Image (cartoon, rainbow, N blue to C red; front, side, top):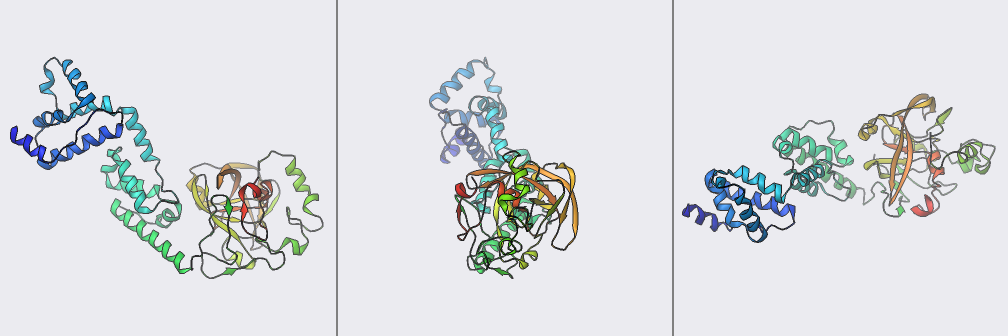
Length: 395
């Protein structure tokens, strides 16, 4: 026993004073066990080596606890000691809380893949059953990646955590490289109090370059309604927005878009990046939809707001049925009938949480299209300067 103790002491084992820090208790046990494993100690000496490392309140606690064993403490195993220790200093309620924190972990917009991986492994120790299975660990890690990276991995199957981490790092590096090759021209990102759109914006296809509308000098998708003398709300000629019957119908409704004017017909100008080539400008950017990053097109030429069928699966929600089918006129001069809507989806712009009802539609290059009904509801517009304070543009 003396030789075991000397070998143990040479590793400079940590002391534990019984403070209120739950993680300090878990860390102490973990570090002690790592030393036991390194020295290959048998079970019968572990408790006798660990007890002298208790000091202060922890030492008083163990002295009182020994009195309850009535001489049976010599038969106590290391695992039994850990259970008693955790009940006192790292209770089950705290362990469950840390486990839930791990299961809800997501890579934030400002977090690199490596930073996310470090946090993943730090919290993963509180969910050992999942972490011990490499396939489950890989799946959990992949699901927590932000959408821009996860969507590029969705067609692959990973059998190990190492593989999914390596591929995620490569995707991240490729995204950074692509942004640099575009000369710093990124997809416009909506954050803080600014809605920013480059004056001369190159789309994700890296082929088309768009400029501000030559007629009104504003940013909008589809034909210029001002040039056509058409209403900014319904898109029809013959009247102005202030006299639009559709606006009057909306004004009598609730403060938020309740059913996206689901009865009758609708129009969408752009379903793909190629469709926008006929437009003078698009306003698009990465913004969170229910906390999930989405590539969003702000389309004043669309009467309604839409969500792509593929992206809608990320919401983990079952859509509601529209009261009546909606007939949507597409850029291909075809009419598509849709009948599903995701209600009350949260659009995060800066520190504002705005609500939208998103109609499910087959969109290929955008995750979400916010149409004129949503833009007019929140008084969003794009003036000569494509940066607006969110409090001004969306109040």
